[in-house]
Image (cartoon, rainbow, N blue to C red; front, side):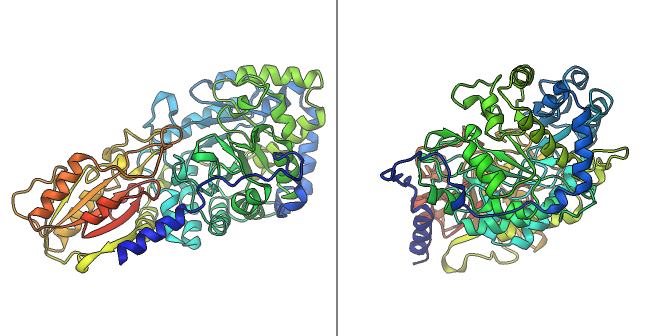
Length: 582
């Protein structure tokens, strides 16, 4: 009965995977939004105080066109040096998923702070003297940084259904980002995944827009704190990014960077609910999605970015693009896209194309293709964020305290999040909890595999090379269970292939998906295909009268019929991160 109920729950989650047909019978453009239909919101007045706006007015009067255009462009650390800012007055720098300080993906927090400081120093002492804004993908904790606290991926946090905990996770994550000298994270992801074949499904909290909206508020406040007029963000706070605007979780067939072929009503009701919540909470930035709505790329959709987001939803912060996403707008390339700025984009994410983007945008500004007022508006929005982060003026807010990384309270919070995220789908004859003093075998490919349990966006983009030694304050699932069993007076053996000397009473078999991120993660279906070795392992254990608990690691719900039928107990553990003790 429990298995049937679990299957029913899974089928309900998957219901509605097929894209909704778009009714164009009334005529009109199916990719042009009607702002009057959308929910209202408003960035807090503390973001646009009279003092801040007056200071920006003075700066705009002094800045050259070259300096203004430079503010609109963001380069990746893998393709720019601090000295380049003396010639190209860029406004922002990022570190992408495979970029580390000085070419080292496993650099320390101190090295991150050192690199950020070098870029910041050059930017303050050249051009208009406006410091750069530095962003990073800290999507489940400060996930590019060894030794950081890595929380469960968002799908697991959604299963926990605990907005209060989410805010605490935001606070901890912000402190650790700040501890490495960085002040901006590209999170939270507010996608509402509908077709779970999408490889980024685990980046969404839920398929329920109501829960996503609650989490949007909680995570934004956790990362930034409440915006206060006349005050900059606390040094342990960072700018949040509501992403990816819009419906990246609603594309046809779950294709990454695909097309959401849905009505405006569905676009609003399913995919837009997190954004008003984040904006009202004070989110300082919004990232535009690679994807499209009824054939129109979001990076070029003025009706959504300007009329809805900045108009109807009252967003007063900066709108940033995604990795060369502007190049997918028809008529554009990675090196040139005035249409994106005219549509409402404020900051090009041009990781390796920044020189061409700078030159082409400057030319478009000079010949009037991009109006001076649009350039000034984009610069104003970027400067608002810099003022709020304490980057402007004579005294910069100081970030870069490595002591904030991986603190005991953060690690305890991560363990709490893991425990709350686990979903028990089967437990025949009370096999769980395992009795104290038992002889326990921990087996399977995920038994001692930090990469499998942490998933993508951990150290590297796809997360395939994450190792236990990257997180000395973490534990693999197998080592954590082994320690707990031995502490309780039992015997524990970790053996990936399930071999043992003394017959165990219970075997915990850890299996599931291998790490992946965007592109690599899209799947043709949701059937989990157990490997012959895993099937043989479980069958062998069962044939010896050993009760089997399956711990299933995945970035999405999957059909696991044979596997769940074989198991005595089955736990959906999602991608729990580095704290196996949870």
